[in-house]
Length: 77
Image 1 (cartoon, rainbow, N blue to C red):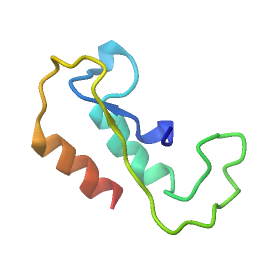
Image 2: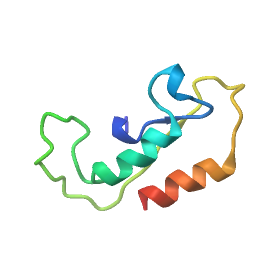
Image 3: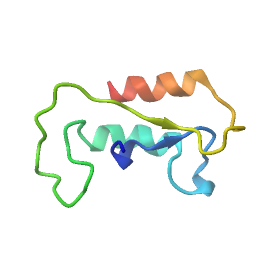
Image 4: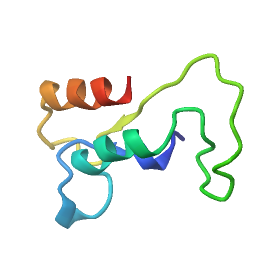
């Protein structure tokens, strides 16, 4: 899986629980891309040659908004 700090689920809202867009964007500033996904070892840097960002569709009927995807990608970059 990818780092849960950047976890984003299409259509997810804060009242639904985790995985909403605003939190994922805020966490891109707090969690470096080369940090272990486990918060037990935040001081451990991984030798990284690339990175990825996953976007989940837990509810296939959720609305897909391309501008939200690009907003998260821009923050992650």
